[in-house]
Length: 396
Image (cartoon, rainbow, N blue to C red):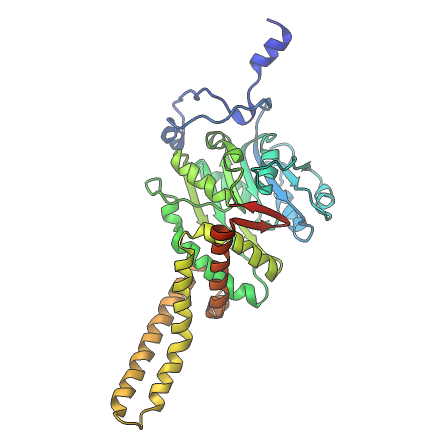
């Protein structure tokens, strides 16, 4: 056997990807047992690292000069003697062809590796392409994909790994505490996140027996072998909501998925402007809610009931001196009680958003904007079949 042949035979594909099923062991985690019959991943020609480290944190960044520094500071500050950056874990920023100072900011943090995203090929979204660039070089036993607009609580990285291991799951995803600014965000975001909480209850998402699945790409922790079984981001290369698609794949392949609201671990300010918020939710809402038009009709009805019923009740009360005044007065009270019931049910739903009380209180004002965005998202996905995000356009 030649040296080249010997070297080739000793190479391991990156991330452990192989056409051969892994050998069962007595210490295999529960999710591995459930996934034993799942299909193998794709073979790549990059060699596996000689020695794995505990964690690789991957931050895709495209024109993020206004928020990247805070994100990286919250991450590098978690380096300590027993969890040292560069030794026990690595932090990789993938510059996704930014036109601002994103790459320079990343290079200003000692210990941070900066990569340039590969060429964006047809059939790939920019984010999937960026994280895949880093994932194929990752040395971590765990891979954390997190966005540039996140801020992480001290010690959160280690606690997340321990949580995943304690619950014996291959994928752990957090829904961060949302930071909002401006009236438009304060009235809209509680509405969106209350609907998400109802559509994707964390308890059901985390239950292997339930088909419902969800994940948040702002904080997505995946065990290396689980990522192999999912096929990596290459399997969701063309998906606008790659995080949710990975979660569904995890459920199908019985990887083991845990999802929860995690204000104790991470926070994010998703949008820096109203226009970015409109573009972002137009991209996502029709994918998150299959019944976007029906949902828009229900929220339109909410707006009518919340703001129309009091007016109608007052009109009936004002008619109390007219003919058959007792009947009109009774109708006014009936409408008032119906309005009160609608109000209680509305706020009970919005409270599930985990937003502050003041923001939830203002949420009725956001109903027209929410309805408009639901329709706009439906129109872009179902009629135009094209959405845009950060200067790029994607077919749907």
